[in-house]
Structures are given as C-alpha cells and as structure tokens.
Amino acid sequence: MWMRTCRSWLSASLLACVVGASLISSVSGQLRIEIRRGVERPVPMAIVPFAWEGSGAEAPFDVSGLVSTDLGQSGRFAPMDERDMVSRPSLPTEVRFPDWQIVDVDYLVIGRIIQDAADRYTVVFQLFDVLGSEQIVGYRLTATTAELRAASHRVADMIFEELTGIRGVFGTQIAYVSEQQEGDERRFRLIVADADGENAQVVANSPEPLMSPAWSPDGRRLAYVSFEGSQSSIYIQTLRTGTRDRVSARAGVNGAPVFSPDGRQLALTLSQDQGNIDIYVLDLATLVLTRLTEHSAIDTEATWSSDGESILFTSDRAGGPQVYRVPARAGARAQRVTFEGNYNGRPRISPDGNQLAVVHRVQGNYRIALVDPDTGLTQVLSTGQLDESPSFAPNGALIIYAAQENGRGVLASVSTDGRIHQQIASVAGQVREPVWSPFPRI
Amino acid sequence: MTRSLLMVFLMGIALAGCGGDDATLPDAASTSGPGGSMADGGGPGATTTGTGAAGGLEVFREVPGQGDGPLSSLVIYFDFDRSEIRADFNSMLAAHGEYLASNGEALVRLEGHADERGTREYNIGLGEQRAQAVRRVLLLQGASADQLGTVSYGEERPAVTGGDDEALLLNRRVELVYR
Image (cartoon, rainbow over all chains, first blue to last red; front, side, top):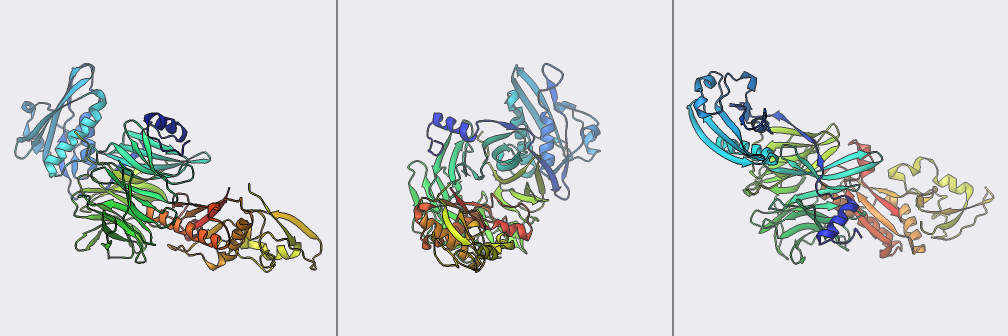
C-alpha cells in the first residue's frame, strides 16, 4: 500500500504512519553554529537589551539577545557584551552618544517589547550611527508569543540590510538530511530548521536513505528522494500539512529533483528500463515527462537557470564529471561549461545568475568552488577534503555546504567573497545535504 | 528462499579449489580454482560425479551466498569511478548467471554502491551503472530480465565506514540480493 502514489490528504496521512513522514516533530538544538573565520575587523556595535513593558518580570522571549546572536554569527559584526554597557537606554531620548563613542562602537540598537494584549506584542527598535550621533532607522513589528523568535530574526535582518546593503537571511530556513545509528538500526531524517539551526522539525523519517532535498520556490514544499521499499522514489511534501505525493517511482534511478523557478516543473534524473541515466523534466500539473538528455554517460544533478530557460547538470560524457548546460526543451544540444580541473559537479546557480557553485576536485580534495560561467574562472572557497552539496543563501552572499570533520558529517558555510567561514555541527549523528530556503514571504 | 541447485562435488577437489582467503578478498572473491564446479565442466545445474582419488561422494545443495563455491560470493567490487566488470569476477558472475538460468523462479536485486568520494547523486548514477553492468553479464549468461532488479544506493549505504583505501574499495560494489 505504501508503494501507491498518494494524492489525498487521507491517504497521505495513512502513508505517514507507515513510513514516518511526520507532520511536525521537534528535535531541539540539533545544530550549533561556530564562526571559524570572520571578517578581519567585524564592525563593533552595541545592542542594548530591549526594555519590557508588560505583565510579569520579563518579556516572554529575549528578542535583543537573539538579534545580537544573529549579527555576531554573521561574522561581520561584533556586538559588545551587555555587561560592558555603561547605560541601558530604551528610548531615543535616553541615548547619550558619548557613552558609546568612548567604548568605540560604531552602531547602537535600542528597543522595547510592548505587550498589547494577552498574546500580542509590539517590538519597537531604533538603529543609531554613534559617530554621526543620529538615528539611521526605526521600525515597529507586531507578533504573538510564538512569533517572537521569527520577529527577532526579522529585526536582525533589517539591521543587517541597513548596514551592509545585503538582504539578511536570519529569517530563512535550511533543510538537511541527518543519519543516526539507533540501536541496530540506522535512521535517516529530513529536517527543516531555522537558519541558525534552532526550531528543527522532522519532515520525514525512515530506516532507509533519504536524500537530495529541494525547496519549492515558494518555500512551502520540499522534493526529496526516499529509498523506502528498497527502491528510489521522488516525493513532494507540503511542509505545513505533511501531505506528500510520490511523483516518480520508475524503474532504476529516480533522483536529483529540483523545482523550476516558477514551481510548475521538476527537473530530475531517471535511468528507466534501459539504464541510461539522463535528465528529464516533469510537468507537475500534467505529469508529462520530457527527456532533455540522451547519453550513455551519467547525466545528473540538474539545476535551473534563474530564468527557467536552461538547465545545468553534471555529466561524465567527456570522461570525468563536468558541468554542462542544455536548453530546457526536448532535443536541444548540451554544451560544456566547466573546464578547469578534472572534476566539477553538482552545480548550483547564484540567485543573480552570475556565478556557479560546484564541487571541484583539487589535489584529491573535493571542495566548494565558484565558477564564472562566462570566463570559466574558478575560485576555490572551502578548505576540506570531502566538501559537497553547495547551496546558495537566497541573498547570494553565503553558501552552505556539507563537510566532514573527524569522519563525521557536518554542515559549514562560507561567504561568497571567501572571508567568513562558519561550521554548523550537529549535536547528534551525521548531517549533510543542506539546502537553503528561499526568502520567507512576508 | 529460492530453489537450490543440487550439486555433487568430489570432496577433495572442491576444497582444494575454493578454500583459503580467496573467498574474503574482494579482488579475488570470484576466483574459482581448478576444483571449482564450473571448471569441472558439467554446466549449470548439472550433477557431476567423480571417481577421483579422494574417494567418497559428498552431496550438498549449493545456494547463493552459502558454501564456498563461486555462487557463495554475492559482492562484485569495482575500480574508482568505473563500472566495468573486472576479469576476476567473470567466473563468479557466470555461476550466478547459470544459476538464475536454471532456476527460473529465482529473483535477484542488484544493489549498486559507490565510495564516499564525489557528489552524492553522481554516485547514485555510478552505482546504477555498476548494477547495470552486472545485469548485462547475467543476461548474457542466460538469466532473464524479469529475474533481475536494480537499485543504486550510491554512497548512502556504505559497507564499511571510514575513508581509508580499504574502506573505499569495499564500498565500490554491487551486491547480489536473492529474494
């Protein structure tokens, strides 16, 4: 029964009971972020603990604490320890700039959390330029208790964007695969967590491998590969409800799903009966399958160009794996894109379409590299031995990827300018195949 | 379990041909010595009787994965980033092909695997190519297409963990899983 494609809520939830694709199940504190290398001189700033104006001794959530953590973990800012603050203003009239000039902070953030009703809060904050002694911006957001974490990330995003010109990604999510030995059994989980690793939810859970998660462009669904029933199949699961559809379970390989930019099509890898591993496009409304490549080599790991007009993929048709581009229509010719080195695979295109992140082999090590698709110029960003699965943050400024440390799968991120390196270790088990979500829809 | 192949061996010759470390080493797992069943002629499912020096007949059922004949090996190993069948696995695959040909109800799933190097979906492709290569050989040996299924796990189900050369080698494999 679990082999049948499920199309309705009901059959999907029955299915969920069998294979453990779960609606919501929390795993607390799965990931821990650590800055390995930041910018040379992170910008000093002060984020004063936000004042609480409501019932009880303190606010239900430490908003300014999370804002400070977010900005600090970005590697670009150095928020000062609150114990070193000479004053704790929460209103603009309370700010004395000399207090902050003397401790050499460039920017100051103050704010308040105001309780409007039993479960309704307004967060007000202001950002000041300490040297210029003036307010840069001020914002006001409302939230319920449950939304205060997201609101905090939003505050951090607004400050980050104001100061760097780059849209913040603290409010985004990552999906990844974890593998854990539990007694005699291996457990594979597909997990979605906030970009800081918190708030982790199990999306699917299986004793057989799960792999290749991919976000829909609206951030509401994940496509992934599951080996339940000792066969590879591709599922699309709606995160909010847990409903899932099996969209491909053909003979042989069903792999490497990626949504088109409009979310209407899925590029995927199939081998079908003849065993030829090629790239196809599946129309999700009509389920019509279009074959894009036909070659005896391995063609896989498709990714869409941002305009949806073409697909880049890995192929070993010239011997070793290299990246090729093919127009997203039947019968078109593929052209080689990467030439530097003898291994370039699993391409991902930056949100602005100007750069290609690949897994690049250099001196026996597999590393994350950026390739300029026009000039072919390759810049190696990571420093590991088995780095893989690069995924751009939706702002294009960071790449998250999988690495190994002491034989254990960990996640890591690197800024696309190569200056900031973070390691994101799992508290338990191995983690891999991180994929960054699109920006949340506000 | 599927039907078994009944084979009769000359005890002494069989032991001489198939014992030792051959059975455990991946690069020689399929080596079938002069006393192996195929070398003795007789073909698949044949009953061979001998009158050799060792004297006395030992009758036993040979089933895939058991005993120490060529059918006992269920794993084929590969070179890095390659899916060609190495010559040292020919006799083992021949034994399985002939077993399948003469046991029409036997079903086998060919599970392709890769080592941890390289990207994950590419390794799924590589595992599939390896499983397909084994499938083609078994078809040539007389197995029928509906007896053979393939699945590639890529690097997702390593036989051994660790990144040393031996672990990498043991993970580049196709496993024959009889059902």
